[in-house]
Length: 508
Image 1 (cartoon, rainbow, N blue to C red):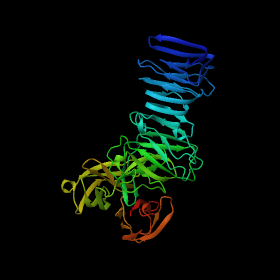
Image 2: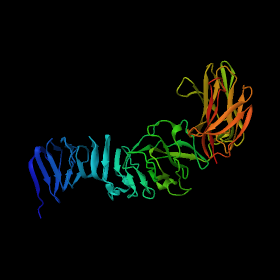
Image 3: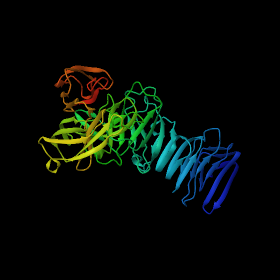
Image 4: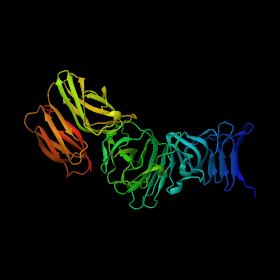
């Protein structure tokens, strides 16, 4: 049976052989009936005041490298009907519309959004949808409101490069996929196990994947007795709900497509606040956990990382664990020798594949650390199980507080940072804590200080968890504290208003 299209005021203008432009003028209506198919080998343009009702299929594409864009200039939004719009060009296509599509099929090279585009269903066969400054919106709450064709397994051949908004109903739909990535690869974020303990108040989630921002400086995260030493440069995911949930949990699976340098059982998902560029802000999401060694999401061959029982959102990255750091410091000490010289001393208990150490310094009126000199490893071929002693003299006549740290460099050029030590002005006062991380006990050494000083240990919420008095060298027992990161503060140790503050890591 012949399929009919009801067309009013339609102009089809042939421009070149094999190329046509479809324009619907103001006041005109184009009605494509159910079951009908229309193929346009060129641009589709809707003038302001026109109407398009599509209950069939509209194929828009051109294989000759010429434009095949969809531009709707109407000022008042409406729904196009129940039909499909299929974008099939071998070159880039553009789309701009205030109206709601029932279904958009991507089966071409790339599609660039010129406005927010809303479709009840996005069906991805192949090609990249570039959202730019806009977003693709899926108001449908079914699991398959964003769906991959069978020829696009895991959204590896078609995905969104940019921001995707999905409406969600966690109480009734157990799983949602967010096929986001960059210009060259897909890195899907998948929310699972939603119905067991549904997130409250969350009605949509915005997602995008982007480059890692900032460095790993300040990264101090432990989990189950192991320390995270870096965040993968492969990229980070941004997941933002309409409101922060106050109850509920979900599992998060992140695709490792394109990620390199990961080791089985030595990687996991970490979180930090949205917009942060600080390595110090990464943390293990409270109440969450990962599977045991060899479990789902722990092996590189699985192709994804998995973290269970999350209750919040923001930025997520892939942290690399080290059960044993390549260099174990047993002492790190900073002393002012003269008004113009500060001496940095450190001792290693073990070294593995160690190239050496950059000694870095930041004055209190500076915002970044700068390298003051490099000290090569004393270990044969960078490996040793014996104590090794190092020293470095820094020309420093600064009268305020100077902060020092070590940047340990592996033979393969991976880097790890020590904690920060402080020395003040022309005084002989200095403070050392070691070992750090510790397994329940560490020592504080005060030099140049007369009498006792009060010291306090706070958790990361600012709650004081331990108070002690320090004189000379003082062992500190923290066996009662849970594994994690704490702040040690010794008020006025460098003089009135000049406090020592340092992170202390307890591992189990």
